[in-house]
Image 1 (cartoon, rainbow, N blue to C red):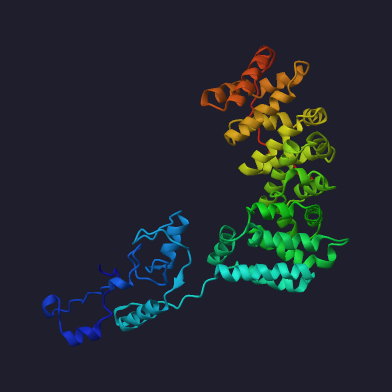
Image 2: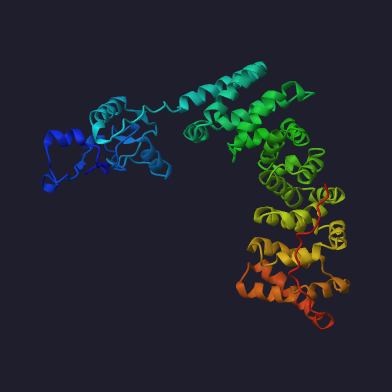
Length: 446
């Protein structure tokens, strides 16, 4: 194997010593090819190792290459094919120093010395820090807990360390995983009469937990406690932008049946959509609302509360201005709201809803189209002749035919067929209009 480093016009000293090698003395250029010793090459990438590590089988690889191999689901040594007893990568300092010396010796050929890599975070350090956090929680020492959480936060700035912290979940007991420990700490310091007393450490825990999403089962269980949920809702209603975003993302992880029992959760979620802090938090809030109005045991009461808080008009604005993800989730929530009579009436009384929903049919995604068909199926009634004629004028009949032709799931197909039968009787009463009207001039309320 020959190293791909080839340098021209930088070997004048070698050229003077060796004389004219090419061009017969007519000023030819010297081209030198440097061969990398085989034991300096990674067996996987066949490139010069920059951070050599040794596996439990005794074979040395470049860290990046062997980590990709293991992350790909492989559990054997690439060279020996032996099953790995553990996945620890031990730095091979001897080989690394030899490679660095070789690079220095060949620096005249344009080869740069490889830097000494930073010592990566170990699972042992993560476990020890988690144990200390649990100890600080038992003592009620929020200052020490904050110090340790900041340590994890600082580790997480490096992507490799972050993978180690999150991956520690698979190498330890569920209760001692980093996300479970932090969720436990959040639960401990959110218990009490006032959250202000421990607000600093709670904010730090929230920020770290967001990049551990999706959380493990133990972490979700801790965050689903009454104290933790009340604290998350409190942060959601607060003024700190970062904490509101973190709380919105984490509420999506908790158990919906427990969240449904928390007071003012509907108000907090609606406020978050009315005063958006970013696309990610808006999507998270819409997803949480969807879970509440579709899966909670008292979903009817919850849906009614959301309707009373004027959620329908906010959903319409989200459908107009949102991207694909926001639009899908808003249509999903709107579909669930139409399950109750009050929601259906509010949707029908909003003049923008019908033309906007029809416009989104076949224009966003198959999931969005299925929600649109379900919404139309729920709001249309033979008594609502005006709405049915308007739907035909907006081109709903033709779009439903196209939907059946391009294909959809069985439930959507059944609803579309029933809608076609219902709309067919009003085709002669409707006059065609352009259904491609632009809603960009719709003014949002601030």
